[in-house]
Image (cartoon, rainbow, N blue to C red; front, side, top):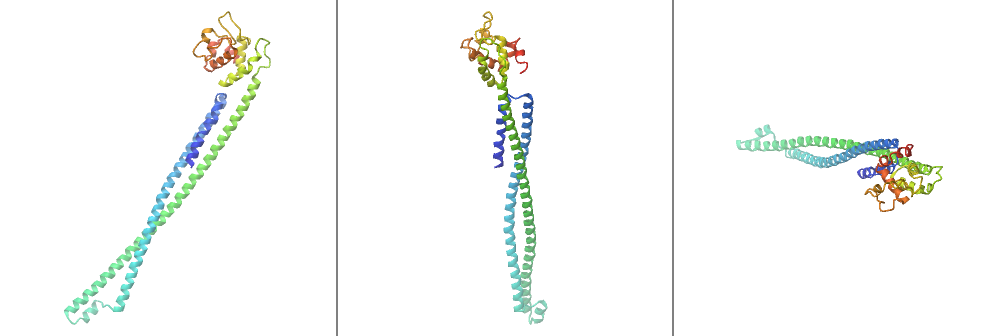
Length: 313
């Protein structure tokens, strides 16, 4: 259960953080990295606790088996001890009832050598039987002590392992609670960032658009294209105004054409998915320019205007 929950949480933080990376500032990126390291540390701690829990559970199963085995052996030993004790008691009672003679009685009561031999043999057999019973009693008592001690130790070890496993469970719960808190904080940060981004996008629109052809009408297309790649819409607008003043039909002697003043050869390049559209198609140029900026070609293609257009963005 804990392992499955851990895996589920592992997949959550990257998903939450990913959408913000394209729009995040360097400080937010460092915060995301720090959060990732903290979450990774918690994941390692959770992994150690889960491993300890699993090991304790395995040891507890082994100890439970030992306790059951020792319990059975202890019952057998107690039974054997009872049987041996009953046998010894029966032997003593029988000897008392039959008034079995000892060696001296046999010697005094024997009238012949044969009677003496028979009497001595009887005494020997009785003594040997009782000695064997007494030996069994001693052995069974020793086994009883040993197995009782083993059972007590196993039960004590089981209690220790149960406590260890409970500690592992508590450690897992604490780490998971910390992880949920971090994820919640990350989610709140992403939501706040998205809200800030929406507010910034709305405020990015230039307050004053030069009174030239097409300046304001391209703004919705520019914001959409810039948002797709995490670019500054205001920077793209400034670049367009510098290059063409917002005129989709602008021409610099035929060498550079359109909103962003593309050379026909550049516009027809394989990098451009919109190359089959007219170079004077304003929407196509906006989308193609957002892609070019995303590919990092801004400084090389707009050598004199790129730095100024994006200097504050």
